[in-house]
Length: 110
Image 1: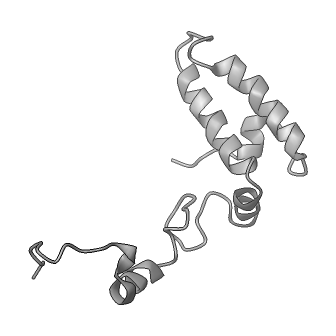
Image 2 (image 1 turned 180 degrees about the horizontal axis):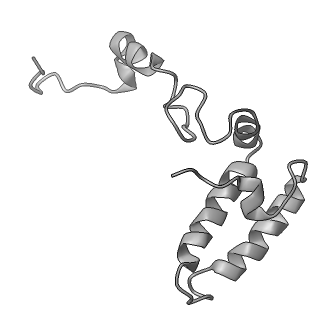
Image 3 (image 1 turned 45 degrees about the horizontal axis):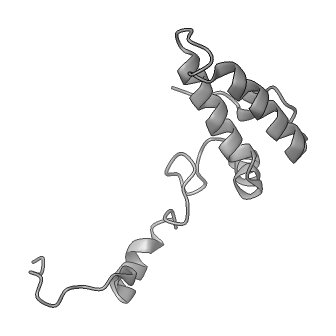
């Protein structure tokens, strides 16, 4: 299932300012909040509005969204955080232990 455009969800233009994004989000969040609006399906609309704001309200995520759309540039779908390093995380874990301390008495995987 393809996702709707975040700008379309919030009803704003692609060159909207940070304040315009926040204002549009607040207006729609009040309209679709499940505690306020008891109509069927409003909880899903609220989640959609919240997701759009989480991306467009963050400059880095918005820039990435503007460039790649809903697809992650590493081809893994969606917006990943620092854990999506294009597969390099496993290599770093292998050499540097992933930053986790291991219990010397714990059984090792074979």
